[in-house]
Amino acid sequence: MKHIYCISGFGADGRVFSKLNFANTDVHFIPWFNPLKKETIEAYAKRMSAQIHHKDPILFGLSFGGIMCIEIAKIISTGKVIIISSIKSFHEMPLWMKLTGKLQLDKIVPLKTFKFIEPLENFNLGIENNEELKLVSEYRKTIGQQYTNWATHQILNWKNEWQPKTMVHIHGGKDHIFPLKNIKADYVIPDGGHFMIMNRSQKVNNILEEILN
Image (cartoon, rainbow, N blue to C red; front, top):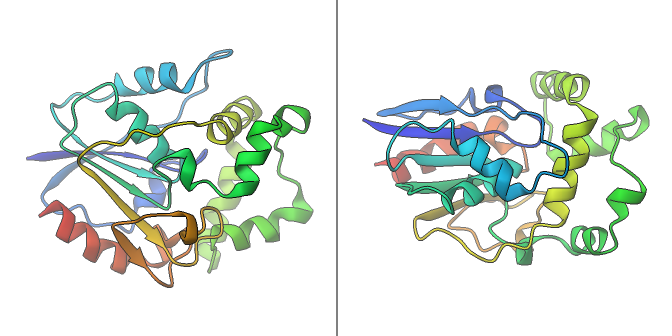
């Protein structure tokens, strides 16, 4: 039996994978936890990897979870690393993210969600229905500021250029967070946005079936 370990996006949980079909695999979800003070992404990945209890697992990561899968793959042997709506290196980041990280603007103005910008955030995420809106709203209420500040800084300052040999990248043609023009993906869903894992789940499942078989 293959074992697949899933890591959700920024501050999310296993519910974002609820519409996916991981046929013939034993599925595990690795939750986010609060980072330690001044903890590096490498140290965090090592703590997260301690939750993996099978040899050569498949890692599957959404958005920031994809970044974390790559960091974990530097530590342990993996059967395959699948990322969706994510990036493989800092070269695939949009310019505004690179500049924000370089200028350390997240330290000057820490990220915080305000009610009036939620519609813009929802647009960028590719939210399409009330089910997704409710889920994202719940995440906003439960995510802690300590984790938010840490995760934002890690994403903006990620300088990775390495990738696993078994890497598979699935991306959406209408992703507003990580635009496709910067991405070299193995599979592209033309009408998929950043949240296509839910609202284009059948198309994602078709790709997963091919990859996992």
